[in-house]
Image (spheres, rainbow, N blue to C red):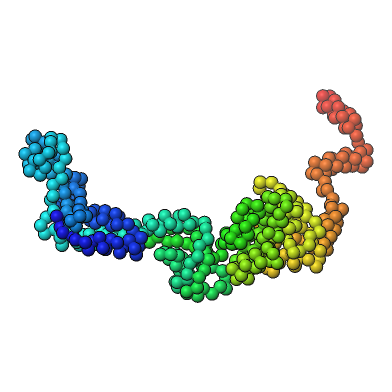
Length: 410
């Protein structure tokens, strides 16, 4: 066996403190490295009866081969005679297994080189597994990190002992991410790549708004107020639809808080992003009217409501059209995302003009004659021409034909 001493256990404790990897994992990795190195040394990769054992009391480690005690030895690699086995253990009997120390004398240097490679690999694998287990539990939740640096437009965020990546599409437009600043991010995904484990986070995800409301509004945390839907354009505006499960609790007022204290805290966390709190309704007409707030609505006409399409025509006063649509169509776009309805907005004057045009087209619509009717009219005209111009009808024609036949016979 090879004498290691207490240095190994001191190193295990240090690694456990720094990386959180248990001593058992490191010792098991070291034993596996010893076995791998020994198999290379004897050029027997397929050997299955070889293992490495560490004696924690003496601080020695060695490679052992397991053999079965038999009367007649047929395979020296897997079997041992009872007489030889008694020299190792006096109480051994036939069919018992005996562990024989086969550690080579010059094995220290070879084992050290192999152990270094295997230990490094195993520690990396253990770190990956720890990160994977930790962030699989955090996936879909909000966490706090520290901005580390920028790499190719990606923001690297330190979360505990792990560095997460925030891609450009998950960043808030116009936001400056300064290294060292604390940031609240949403854990979107955990990807295993051949080189490393990658944690993807977002600062623009709509679920960040949900998490912030759950933190600031106790009624949401208790289930009294429910968030039905969220539509967000990060850095600009968010619409959130809420409903109350208690008729005595105002869902919108609970989210705003006394003198707007709750909503102001959330707006400050989102860097002054505008937030519209909308009252949810099962009635699509009422729900659409609420989502287009603060614009006033004259009427809502449901054009289609089935599994394939949900469309509505909304009429607003002329002076409310730009407000209902929003800058760059933002208000109606967020209303569409929040409700799932395709919303077409018209002003009162536009709607009146559209109705007049439809009425005009209906009044001036004429049915084109069918081709069969034209043919019948032409045939009638031909018959009338024969009778009027030539004075010949069908009876005269038949009489003339009979006369011709009689003349031919004569």
